Length: 392
Image (tube, rainbow, N blue to C red; front, side, top):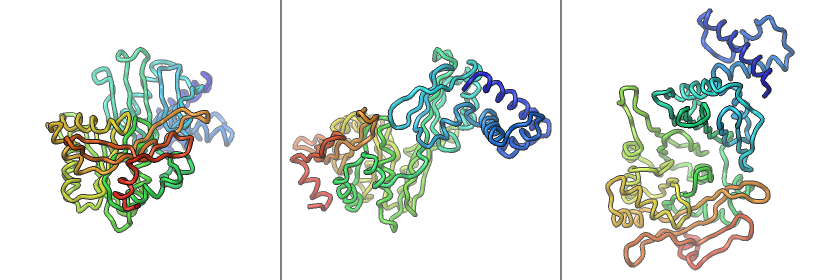
């Protein structure tokens, strides 16, 4: 975006802001449209529509970032200061031509987005982690914690809910594994979807929850409303941050407990990242079959160590975590994001069975493996997994 266009938008935005304040009007897209129409500058129809969008974005949204956030192909928008704005359209990071006219302008956008997420961002509170009204996840850091005026990380929610067939078409799931995943849901096995940030864990979990029979009740617990399975009976519980006085917080641990009182057929934890793992394992060990969660891990074989680390946050010893997890969990599905000649891809690389070995240690044995290109393979652990999922 050129400097002259930026200047025109900012000048029009300031005029519209003054107009709305003078008449005590609420900032809506309709109010902005009327204010722009009343401006003495005559604009062509297509220019008028673009100006309304730009001015509304400048006053209430993400400003010059708004078109990127509205691009259905964009999954992430990353701002590294005034001169670097990057996006991910599923092919890896690409630098855009968007720039901010000044450090103060970038800071204003960051503060405005934080406010829209219901958070404070200023010199006294220079970092924020929140979610915008449309579901976009926001993380922002202000100077002097970063060298530029601000650094923004925006994770855009998918424009539509993907089903298993969509993931097969996108080469995220081998077609030959669909029966395995359907058997996973049909047998009410409890499972974890593991992987790094941005590997597609939530997308896969949402598509699997769409396979749950429609006469079952799903209760989803999340920090923010991200999982939106295509299912007729879903109850979503979301955490709440403390207010300005530091009171009123409701965390994942409490919400997992509340979910168990809501007659769930499936208990779903959007992301296991802390002491709430104790409540989840307890639930899956007390008759709540078919529960699931996502978890950060570098590989399926690293999930036991990750569970132990989370369990220790809840005061659980490694032995107790191993015993609880072996009894509660059946399967780990690991997802990766890798660069291929066609671009970055997210796909399942392994489906593994969870068990306890002779010493009582938790084991995750890979049964199905895929490198995203060649044919999927099976290991000696596949027959056991097939029996578990009633596929043999």
